[in-house]
Image (cartoon, rainbow, N blue to C red; front, top):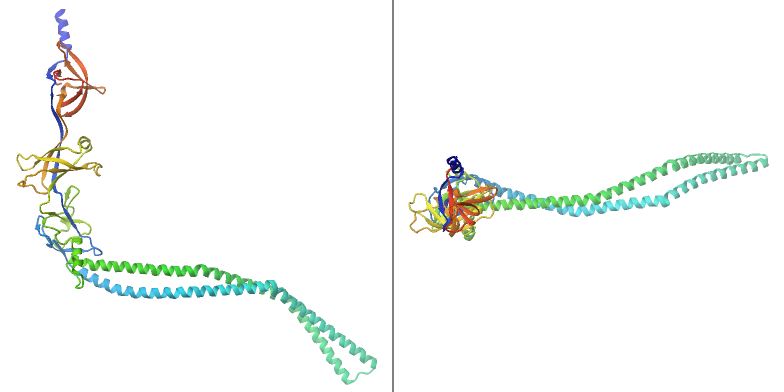
Amino acid sequence: MKPDLFLTALLSLPAFAGEHTVKAEPFETSISLDAQFLPTDAKVIKIEPGQWSSFIVKDLVKHGSLVKKGDPILTFETEDFDKALTEARESAKSRALSLAIAKLELSDLEKSTLLNLESEREKFARNQDTLDYFIKTGRTLEEEQIAERLDSAKRSLSYTEEELKQLLKMYEEDGLTEETEEIILKRQRSAVKSSLFNLKRAELSSKWDLEKTIPHQAIDLKSSFESASLAYETAKLNLPRTLEQKRLIVAQVIRDDAEADKKLEELEADKILFGEAEANKKLEELEAAKPLFGLTAPADGLIYYGEIADGNWALGDTEKFLFEKGSVPQDTPLMTLVPTGSPLALHTSLNQEQRLQLPSDAKGSAEVTGIEDSAYPIEVTSLEMAPNVGGNYKIVLKVELPETAPVLGGMNAKVKLFTYRSAEAIVIPKAALTSKDGKSTVKVKMADGKDEVREVKVGRQSDDQVEILEGLTVAQVVLLPDAP
């Protein structure tokens, strides 16, 4: 029984591949990156015209050409541009005439608006006075006049009838009626008849005037007043609006004319892109325009097609237009000039994990692909705080290159940057570490030969080693289990 018990106990013990004696030693962690050499001073060349948009390549320098300051690097065909410039100049003359006419029309309208507004105001005032007079005085006066006319006709009839009655009475008392008296009676009877007719006519006309004429006059006067009032109110609104609208139209014409003049000026200025200039242009104006458009080399240096900017060299779509008869887009990087003697820097990017590990003053070394035994010192000079759209962080590294180093912009390198260094760190193999439930432990061999589980605080890790911050001391022995 005893041998069996011993064998069972032996089999239940964990197997260990070896032991590791803890000691303080230098420890470092690093990250390795691919980087590219790019010049620190690069002048991007693009076409930024004022107005013209069609640029057909006539001649250009080749990629990788060495140029001197002032050398032509890009020229364009001019036929379409010359035609457009001529048409723009002719259009400017026509616009000047149209603007003069519009200004004269506005001046006339400024004057006529005041006159027309005053005329409508006067019409309104007259109609208002007429209506007020009719309401307050005129209507009553006309009604009284009609009543007086009817009373006058009645009185006239009464007078003529009374006269006839008196004549008949006088002639009856005489007993005889002479011829003269007959004539007088006949005339009086005729006067009575006329008075009767006049009374009838007065009654009818009075009725008509009272029932129709005066009410119609009241309606007409009120209607005329309302029309005049409406016309005046409309004039007060519309005449200034029409004038303001004309002012806006003229102002727009002036702006359009100014914009067209500006375009013409820009078109005139764009002639510099084609190597042309008016004879009366000042030399200093031409010199100021040249670097703006970048048709000549701004300095001695090397020409790269595409753009070197923000830590990247990209050809873009230059192969689609940088050739004879190619159509060059505006506001697009075409070439980059690297000035002679421009220092080189290494450019690369970090992912989020690397960015969190790397200190802003990190140093390291760079190995240039194709150059044996190259380990040039490097250090961080720029480290972005915000990621780009790809989630990476751009980094720029200063590199110490020998004067004889045959390194050129665009070449690649392998860089190693130290993220952590400790001169005396307690380091053990990762295999000795056990992690469970958020705790890290190791088995320590005690002086009596037994082992004891110790909880430790873990620091940095590098390859197959791990730094222990707490829980172990120098000279202690940790056990390494067999590989599974």
